[in-house]
Length: 390
Ligand code: MG
Image (cartoon, rainbow, N blue to C red; front, side, top):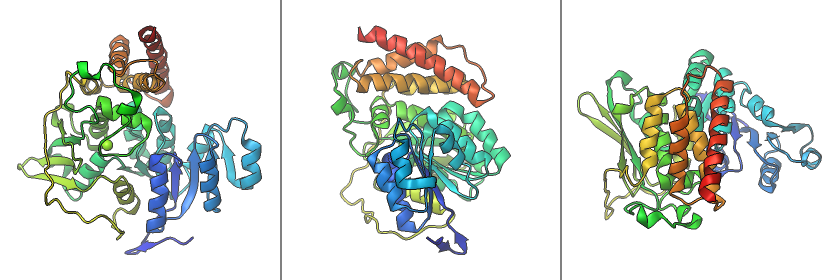
């Protein structure tokens, strides 16, 4: 498959990490639409969907992080182009002159992000936990490796597009929009008995179960505040969140002279994925015509008492160091426990608050340093879950 030439710039081959997840599948679709070759497809498990994807892309390396006994079968299908283990994912992220789309879910994505940046690749980052858990490590790898870091999160893609061509020192404030999730407008007492199915029914965005639950608690927005802090070097006092249920305005940037820019569109993750892959060009693709006639766009302040996870995010961000890695790890455990119906919805914030409150923050200087805080947080969160579930 040849590279598509855009104004003389060839699209780099794509390495898609988390290929069978929601972002990964949409990235494969975008790659086909814009004609980007796929160099590698990596997924956590040896699923049928990875088999299908691998067969549909005979030139791609196929990585299975955790094959669980499927090695022989995968080898019989793919021969020498299949690789196994988490190390194989880190290795393909370092394939020369590629765009690495990191759609891995959770803190497991950090090493692959670092590997991509250290190799000088373009990192199209959908794994927000990379920045939440290891923001300072990523910033350093970006500076040292000479790669590019392009956000694939609708809000951050919006901000990134708004500050193209601007002097970033004139950015005064970032305003992240949030849909408010399925429980917007509810009181705490109205959320005591919410079910997993209710939490997973997101009103505007279609995403995986963890991020959808994080959207319902507003923890996703907390992560995005931290993400924005690292991506755009803006202090926490200058990052605001506004609830915007229609998810049409993807975020705002206010400049020193009072000018405010925003990026708008109907919710569709393929747009930020495509922007990250084709930058600095834009590729014409079929899309829903933009028409706001008859659509009311509304904005309201977030309710931090009902949704304490957002406040916990600001608290962890201001603490800095390992606090944000702890925030993420405790949330991963708490959300998994909620999805397994071990704890109630409101307990997610309780677990995270307890673990964050017990943590002694330090500045991590390596992945191992982040990993130690992450492991500490997971075991404390497990203990809290066990207590709350009994
Ligand atoms: Mg987002």
